[in-house]
Image (tube, rainbow, N blue to C red; front, side):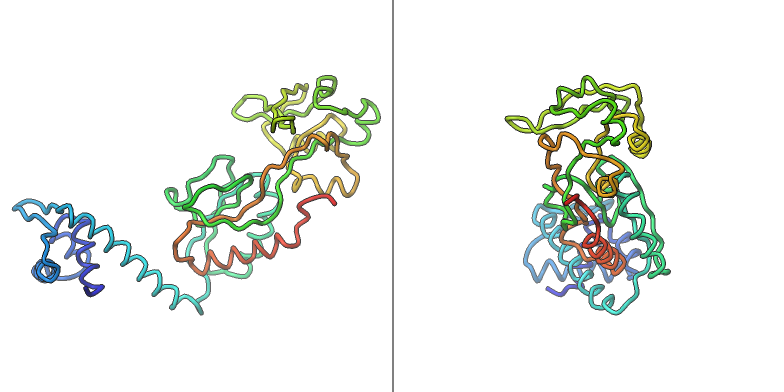
Length: 299
């Protein structure tokens, strides 16, 4: 079968109307109707039931329409890939990330990208919600944890661990906890999630355990908890990529390292099995390059 015939049938099947399909294709209705009839004759199957008001797909027609649409999409993506090789990135790029990861790691990439590719409009959404990339129309995301979605292609950028941190002045005054249970005697800097105090994860005998913590300072902002920790007001929990510079500079000290957990990795993800526009490829390349120099963990 010719690709153009498959394209015509996919359009008719989607519209359930010769008139609407012809309008979208910019062709005479009679031409579309004749070409579909010829397609049925060549296949020796009935693809459509025709009535005076509407077209109805046969079971064979419905299955064939789905395959036609997929083949046409792959052909169009292949054509774009060829024509886009030498083209400069353009259009709109939609990126999403976790707020802390976005503000600490993503900001510099976006700035560099905007300077290098002025033909691209960039929309960045920072949210703790797990965005559905395909359904919500996002091109690329940065995520923390584990990726188990076969609809996504993931590139590992770096490790993701948590660290429990306090200033040296706080630990000198209040002492250093040796076990998670001893946090009950300390001021913990609480970051609220959905108005519920978070419990802190620790490594237990049978896997991760969540330990309730309390403190007189409660925020819904990791940045504010970070500032409070630097000011000596308590013990906080941070992603390692957020506090590694403070640990190296001795502005913060790590505690309870024997109980810290592995939180997976930091990933760059985009929809799998789809043509990547030049704008997306360029952003991914910048992110991977930046990640190779980023201080993800404390030696």
